[in-house]
Image (cartoon, rainbow, N blue to C red):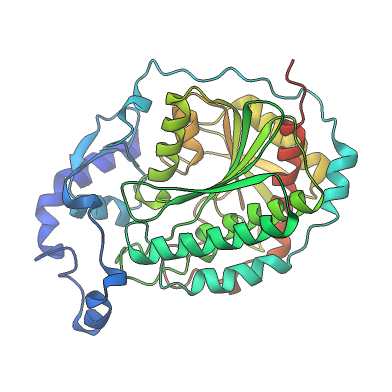
Length: 389
């Protein structure tokens, strides 16, 4: 509630700080950035031509806000959901698919054989070019191009494996598409493993440098490496397993809300979502753990993730609260589906480099990230192959 009140105060103060952003969306930038501003790749798209409906808490009424007001929220560290195009998800009467999770782990042999194939090699090979994009801002050409590049890497991986996997680009109202890799199963039930692909500079969102190595390049390659070894092991699940790379998380969970809404509207049977947002950084002065978001997640899915971590990783789990609009798991939770989120530590603000040029590959621990790839693989096997009756 305290965060909500702070957010309200910030929104009320927007009028007093509008001059900081005048005369237009890029008018506050120093002359040294003029060459960047003039490039078409760094110009924002049309998403914010009209005000957006922003929600900062379950306890605070959503408000239509301008881009400038949204920037004030972001710079103050207030998390939010942009519900403009997914308002029906936020109806209190919403309910989702009643799915069944495995009570006991049964896929140990297959999981362990697949975990033996994991390597940290892919992380650097993908992250170096992925973070070389000036940023991956969701409503820009950079965001579109980085998503296309990521999709090409996924498609090449699938083609080499000659697997029964469909890779699709999910277009949105903004420039950056989400990417979905669908491992076809025998059942129409769907297991979702996800990360987000966009990055943003907190102060200069559409043209500031935002390498986004940890947020969320680390999650992106965590599940990409999981996909690689699933393909290599000829993974053939009972339930369909999808890997999602969401666009627009930094804009208020835009891509994941759109997809969760689509699945909800189409009556798709989503069993559970396990989301990975930041998996590469931890303070060496603190215990190395898997952080598990305790709020706005499903307790049974969290309990399952704890079992998976104990059985298949070397790390303990520790729960912590992430807050409203924290990341894309919240979209599935809001749509009435089971969801959980694994995080690099139990301290949400530990990595002070994010949303800046300092969020680089050099700050990441690939061996730490490997434990999260193990978790993604185990989730795909144990939930994807759980008996459905």
